[in-house]
Image (tube, rainbow, N blue to C red; front, side):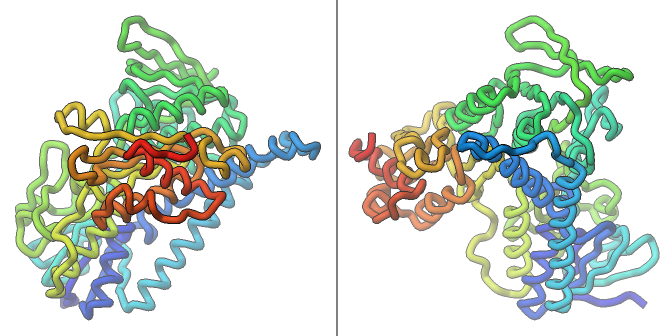
Length: 464
């Protein structure tokens, strides 16, 4: 006999498990179906282990600063297997924490492969039946596979493969300079690997502000990373000596790149195949994404989709918020918003210097002929950055020239991913530049750079 629930969630990633906990808090009976470990790609093979590696890379690189003040450090004794093991310890702790939270909130976690068999009916491993009034699809995404660049996880790595690696190559070619590519370029370079970073677009981090990306580009080059933007990878060949990647420069000409290994991070695609969408008539677009309406509901009433399976920004924090919105609607509450507002979603890239942003980018404003006023303040203008040796960076805001409304904000520099939230709060609360400019900011802090940038909107920065 089928078990009965109010909500069945397929996938226990940041969207699924957050939705499950919030639904339980609202009094709904919930089960989550997961074929792997709770936490999804983010906790197991993405956000968490990669941030552990980034932190350790930062620590390792900081040893150079100790050498500058006379402390001798044996950097050659690095055991990368221990670095990787430490990242897995973080994963184990957090996935265990998710299990504990689900148990605490009386959310049933059922292991198995789920498929929608009918409206309100899900089968696990083709046998166990679960009935529920609502179904949430939160199956996430996987690495994009491009013909000719398939990953064998030995010489040609995916983001999963490089996170599982226990040895460092002497050299690596990274194909794709989005967030994942740039983060691993930083990690590998910090640990002494020769890195070549290839991006088809005209600049690295093509979905971020171009001035912020330029600062990161210059920092990468200063640290010995070869950055090839405006280059298309044409082919990849493997041999006993390593890999050879042929790239075509957009402005003409071809070049062969050689390295021990390659990391292919062209992007990710939604996991919407094999879960029974066609059985109940849930529509997908040509790319496999599930279109959703208000409260993340699909074209089939009672079936919802959140996170990477939709075309909203493929970020863990977006998936979590969408899960909350969906279950609050199911429980009869009125969510604060019908859907996630993309202008209020912070982006965050965790290499050093970090990159973060919200809202309108300058290239978008120019393309859409949106009038704006720009203010930029360099990191080195804030005394704290000089004191701690983190002067690479800038803060940039775009405002409406008539109303003063904050249209967009972009930061590149140390702790940018933390600092962006002051500007996000300002935008979401409809504060004006002078509201932030007039706030007393502690001295010395990097946040003073935000205050100075907002002062600059009226042309009155103090330290520039």
